[in-house]
Length: 108
Length: 126
Image 1 (cartoon, chains in turn purple, brown):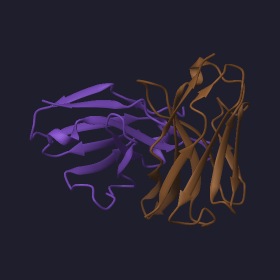
Image 2 (cartoon, chains in turn brown, cyan; image 1 turned 180 degrees about the vertical axis):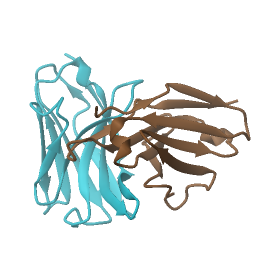
Image 3 (cartoon, helix red, strand yellow; image 1 turned 180 degrees about the horizontal axis):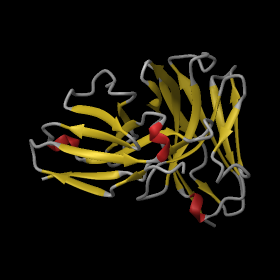
């Protein structure tokens, strides 16, 4: 399957740790990249590869992968982390790219 | 700093062709390291990859849209374009253009969509 599956919604208490997951067969072979999207804004890359953060992304964001599941972890979630998060990877054909359905993160 | 900017009509009639252009500034669209693509997001829904193009003109399309999509590049203008034919209300969405890098390291492969346009809302309605 070329699909990537995410939980629709996750919540976390301010300052606590939250893991957002992305499942798909293709993740056994490729890493996911992760994007944060706030209302009315374009997505922003937060994690790529095994666990790489672009310049300007806080180190409370980290990535990991095991089997068919990629995870984005926010350690010490802040109010500004409330957003939609999308995973993305390449499908089995190697020439198409797919996004997960997105996870809405609420910081309580 | 690289910037991408979408442009085109915000309203398209059903059965007609949606046409958008992405203008790249602050860098060359002809770089061998990058691919250029379109991604859309219907109101209140998730992201959908539409397709990508390399500066040489090689294209890759979402299989679900392939019969209706054409992406082209104009290196002289540092632009690439999207055409989506026979549109319906289901094609109403914010359309983003973005740059993609195919990132490889010793651990494996990951796509990177690192620069995005601000997005443009296209509404399909009569």
